[in-house]
Length: 432
Image 1: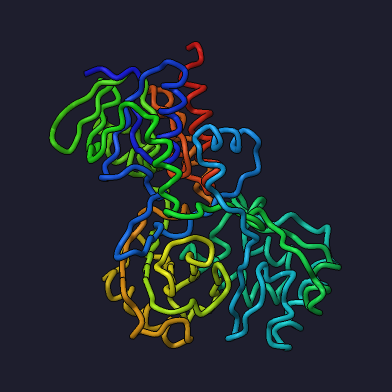
Image 2: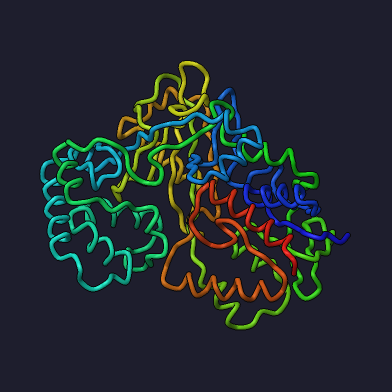
């Protein structure tokens, strides 16, 4: 079989690309290894509870995204929420982002953060920082660095702050004005900031509603079809059952290291080296269905404390109909290295920690599910940019296009996945 366009990966980016291609009259075949479409943007159901594969909230900033969601019949099924998120430091809870909300912290912590920011602000205009550690100190000062930015990001990325580049920070880490920091220390700040200050989420059914809506418009979506080998020189892929499919154009939306590991052609040394340079973390997601009201009104909480195993705990039923009446859901996220050990043991430690900080009554747990996203977050170290550019150029020479968060080895959200899929489809139908 020869596919004009073969798409590897039926996550949101791959589905949108296929739907847009078919809409333009170009047939595409989508190969997805799982039994359901959506990739990480999926939900599972158990005993009346619905659990997403970690937190998936939709932040829509572009009119074309809104128009596309309306075309899918999805837009009016999304509720708008004002973010309720908080940071827990030293047992104290204060609203997120912490840099403009230190008023909830212990007085000595608040003083550290305020003085550190003022000193950083006073020396503004010095040498440009070269890594995340220097950037945080330059932008926020020692107090916020010590109490939040360093421990939180070290926990999330499993890397020291100086190992991280600045390629990811601009959009996702808002820099406040001096007046906002002072107001935040005094409890005078009012109003959410940041790219996720508001978000949309399905009123019911979980986030799977979005990829399911796209998948219904894709004619040739093939589930449980895992690509295990790719021959670039001969333009074929081999599936887990041994079947081979040929392609004229290949669009990959699976993770970049997974794609490279499927290639059977002999790789040049620099390409093999670039593949080896890619770093990432996995995320263990402990999902709990619990009887009774949620212990917090927040949508999610951040935990920089290195003594606690998780970096974020969410209560998804606070923003969607995801639990039976009188019950709630909990989503716990732990960052893991690719070779970290026993998943059940780690999940058990996380559950115990929830009990210890009064966020869980173990007797009230009715459903427990553990999943692992691999990869989950790209580690933006100092080798990433050059390695990704080299791999993209190599794959482009062999007729392979990359699209989406993991294929392009970047950090992005669901709106970006929709836009990436749309852009990939446009490139694929453009005159060669």
